[in-house]
Length: 111
Length: 152
Image 1 (cartoon, rainbow over the protein chains, first blue to last red):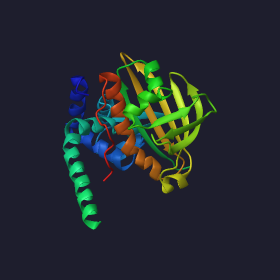
Image 2: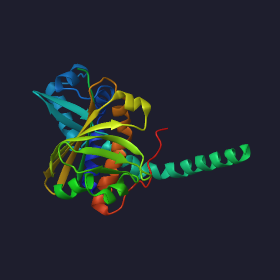
Image 3: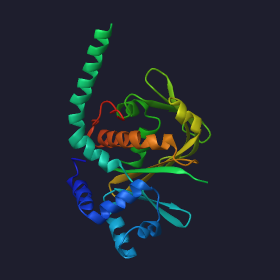
Image 4: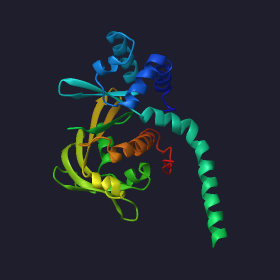
């Protein structure tokens, strides 16, 4: 991810819009929805939702899969994982180390 | 029938052939991005498939249902490490590789013919970590995570 800043730009631009975040929340609640299903819960034109979905798909936050005549939209967690690994995972490590140390000490005091 | 499906997509700057090998027969490479885990199979339609820990314990097993290198692989996939997952039975994992410009779009669709599958829920934990590691290893030569991080 860090090697390709254009991917990161697209990702954060996609996330910077409340309607698009709402769409992601909807898919998080019910994955694999059609455009029609997504429109039902949003105060937005069908065309507006389509445009937002295009931006989300270009950022790889949404994956669409054809199922017969329907196009189903899925929340794709992989780019979010990349953000996690880039900025958060390194803070996690000391915490995990501290927990492992605590476990060792507690077990030692039990024995 | 109700179905649980998760879809994972990543774009990796490599060739379909290289990515296919990283996902299948190159066990040594797989161990680097999958925390020591590797697969055993002849990767031909109908052949058995197993995923193993370094100590030889079988994590998942099943069969190759479809194999069209370097484009499409479908695995019948059953977990054995978690009794709840095992009781759910077979899941289906489809890997599709599609060249797009200088990258390959890898789409992994993991599904099971039951509602709210716990196994499919758990894939939300491991597939993103594995795919990020795979992407980093192929593109930069090193992985991001040397060990998986815990669910809680």
